[in-house]
Image (tube, rainbow, N blue to C red; front, top):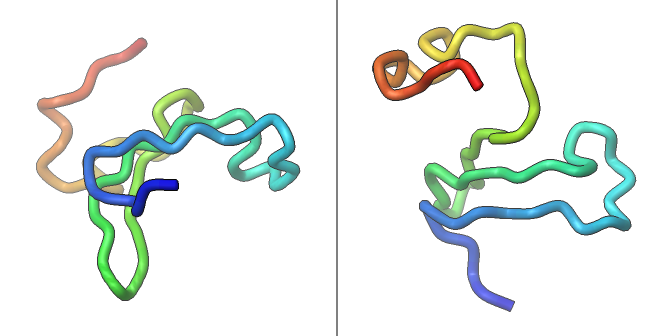
Length: 63
């Protein structure tokens, strides 16, 4: 198994039972000794991108 790093995609295994992550694909943005930050790519959210990731609003679009 590889060590997680920024830029990697995490794909939930079919056995994942946590409803927050079941069936998700996560793009890791940062990984450090304190934890990891990522965005779920395949699930909609009511939170605007600029509210969660300031400066990213020009880099995203509606599906």
